[in-house]
Length: 474
Ligand code: ADP
Image (cartoon, rainbow, N blue to C red; front, side, top):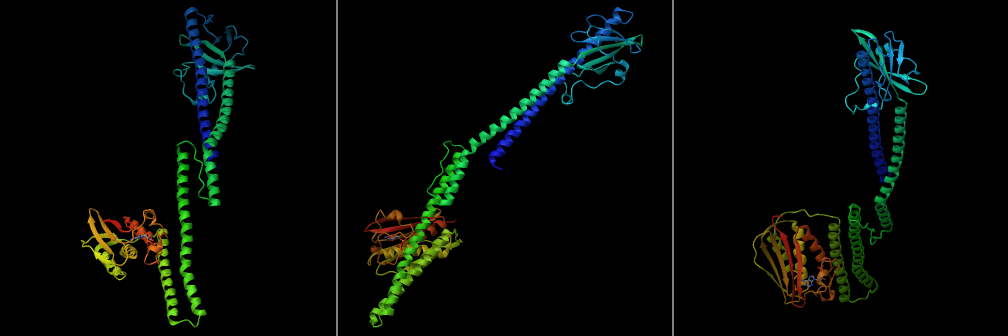
């Protein structure tokens, strides 16, 4: 069931409930009030009539005019025989007053009106009399019988009557009107809420369509048309678009990564294949040429191995692999990397600045890999005779590893890109064309995993400085 239908039904249902309650209560209070008023008028009229006949005459008699508006009066003798009737009540069939007193009738209103308490004062009290109901062919009559007491004995009965025809008809009309209005109101509420829900949910339908189209076409450059408002739907569309943008970036990077990786893998493979073919075809090769071909194949195989190892590290990083960190002596790691880098030096001077012991939470192997990547780069891009300095400094809450070289430097236009995968600023400048362009990407990932920060500053022709800052006690 769609949200739209559910909304409309909920809305309509609630509205119907309110309508039902309001209709029912207004009908009940209204009806009860009218019928109670009538009963009260009957009691008053009968009591007046009783009082007047007691005052004025020795024999019970009806006194003209004591009935009041719409109320007729009749007088019965003690045996229940009709003796007198006021004008308008003569044609009515007589009633048995004793029977009414023995078994009084219930209220004149219907069960619905009986659900609510009387609003206009206390309910009419029958006193020593009793209410009854009389039905003729045309209408109902409300009857009130009051015994006429003379010296402790019943001297007759006074009966007050009022026709219920007009009141009954008016109540029936009210019921019909309320029912009609209720049905019409409910229908209007259902149609209205259906339309309102459509309007409110329209942007969602459009978003669903766009999202489905994007999912099918994998065209992450598409965007959802955001509703102009800044409400929940507008924000939803905006969030969705942000998600699409980041998906688009990730997707593009992934595609580029795969194509770059294949490209990078192909070069050493082609070189190895070419050298192997050369060795197979040219049997009469000189020993020196043979050694050269073999050495090149070996070099390319080594490059391939490094490349695959780097790719594996980055793939693991992309897969969300997190490093396991434990307390590590940063100074020992730096020293270790420094010793290893000394073997890579080809004519450059490696200098280790004095430093104090620092402990960090880290993955020891990755930390060493990080320092080696920086030292390796410094050595690769520094000609023989140059200097590479490694330093470790402790600051408040952080430790800084600094690798400074006096090499070729990085042109300003390349500097913002050096952390991108496979990015190499003019490989010809390197003494070792075997770089993969992945070193700094891996370094960046390692630093991020440690909650640190890496930055490179460079002056072309004068040298480069890499600074890694790692949080201490983190
Ligand atoms: P590579 O395998 O090519 O060294 P990196 O990701 O480690 O790949 O470095 C990316 C590029 O950044 C390098 O190709 C080089 O152009 C530049 N670079 C990095 N470190 C230095 C440095 N110390 N001096 C000069 N250029 C550097």
